[in-house]
Length: 286
Image 1 (cartoon, one colour):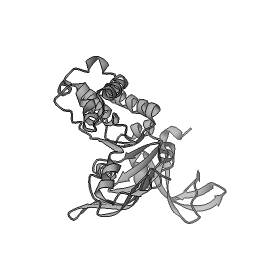
Image 2 (spheres, rainbow, N blue to C red; image 1 turned 45 degrees about the vertical axis):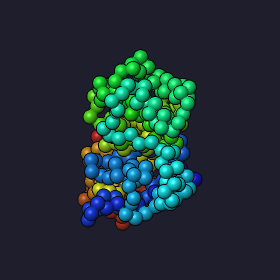
Image 3 (cartoon, helix red, strand yellow; image 1 turned 30 degrees about the horizontal axis):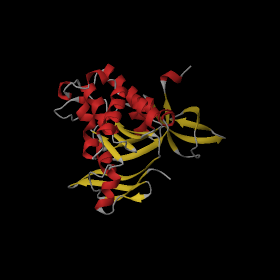
Image 4 (cartoon, rainbow, N blue to C red; image 1 turned 90 degrees about the vertical axis):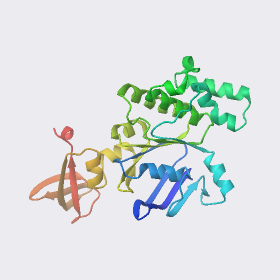
């Protein structure tokens, strides 16, 4: 059973349709990346999964339970997730107190708080600066603190919205290494939104491509990049040579494609007569 299942989900703000008929599953213990251009609806989908908004239509299931349920049940489900925003918000207090904040609200003992916070300070590489005011940190450091503050309550699902947006390359690398370290140590299910194709490819087990409020392809990174399902995905993942044609014959998995009078052979599961696009990457030409 999937940990999170989104079924026929749509969202509207006034008359503007932001998400349209979203269907996607996220398995327990995987990193799932939502990639797409700015305005594709990635943040809205994360907010809906985190139960911060009510969808216009459709269902979200968490661990088999319908999230459109009693308020008390929603609170229990929300406490099993944590959401880190694109622009990290840190409180006007020390790094240590920022990370400990959620545990204090939950009534954890001082000893428990100290053990958990100190462990995460080591994970994010800021143990030596734990007394420093978080408001004085760089963008990358503040993002690491925000991620640690989310993790300290031990969520089953960590939602990350553009975790490296507007960061320099060095800070981006540190955040990516932190995400990988978190997954190795805690096996937390991670859903991250990003417009960085290479980042999704480096970090995620599976990728969902979002364009104009719809998820138009889901698969492993190599499937998305090497076998895009349509022209929109091919253009988004950077295929430069996209040529329209028609399958005129087949021999097993090999299709003969007529590209406006030019004939090529390609691997395709299409049927004779199907209109297709041949995606030819320059680096694949010998």
